[in-house]
Length: 249
Image (cartoon, rainbow, N blue to C red):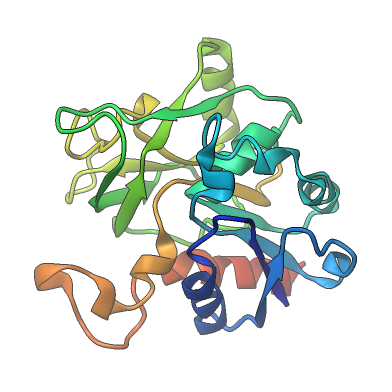
């Protein structure tokens, strides 16, 4: 059973629950302040939205909630945790990503030639690490949407970036439709350092990603000529990989 954690201001919990179920997992939406029963779940998803209205900066208030301290314990026990968009921001602010337990990175305001702030579009990303993780059963260029104002992974610590690369923690990067790593806008939609779209912890059971896989879980959700019917879309592979990890562990 997966807990989809709903913070005040979350707005993607229902479609995230549907994606978990489509991948073969049972899922429940659980309020952020209902910590008492959370230990009974096999994994956790922090969905997108605007927790606490993104006051101060995105994800920072939610990262101080009691439930996040509990998630740190569950991560240490090996349970999978997926943070999508605002959930990604919460995990970074909490130090669960990159994983030292302290704030090492920022998910900063977007920078691109069109806007400095909220930007919504379809992009492409690909797996750029051979690391075996709870979320790595993705082997092709993935069409996937973004919808955020603060999605630019940044850090002043060049040694940290080198360590993330060496450890295989930069799991997903933005790319063009042919799979070439994004050099600039529009393939890199927010100016993220090294085109980073998703980072996992060193153990591989926690992933923070800005794109929305739940919004690409059925082919009918894809745009234009890629659109299809009720068959599985590329984003569902993230949730299927999470299920596989739970089944194996």
